[in-house]
Image (cartoon, rainbow, N blue to C red):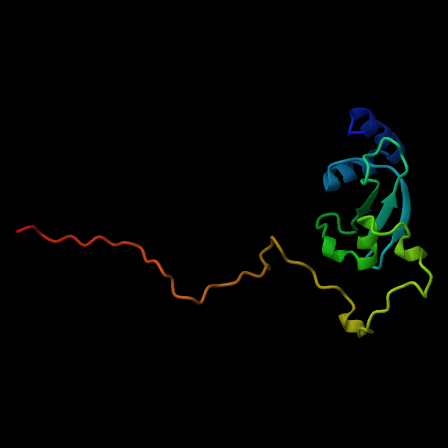
Amino acid sequence: MSTSIIRVFKNFYRNGIKKSLRQIAQMNDTKSGHIVGVDDYGNKFYETSNPEEIHMRTRWVEYKDFWRPDMSQIEPGWHFWLAYGTDTPPNQLKPSEKAIRHIVPAQEKQHPVTYSCTRGAYVPYNTAKPTLSSWSPKVKERV
């Protein structure tokens, strides 16, 4: 079923005005469902079983940092769950089923922030000599 104004009003009623306005500002839609888990960064993951939701749009994330939503701040297991790679969320896996990662020192545990579309973004500069040059007219007097 497609997005309808009736579904939006139902979700406004279920979620409340504050949460619904936050969802509209962040993901341009309103959704209601139950919380599945929270990752190490503080992002909250939700799932719904409402029949009026669009197919393959029943899982979503609400980022901790409202003003800077960044998909790189989601752990790989949660990303796999959001993309419907598995039906079992990472917080419900048995210890033997979890992926083993290398041990990272405490000072490096924080994931680096992505600075795309900001002043801190990486901008490469060109070191090659340009193959074309601009034309500059040279005027001579006629004889």
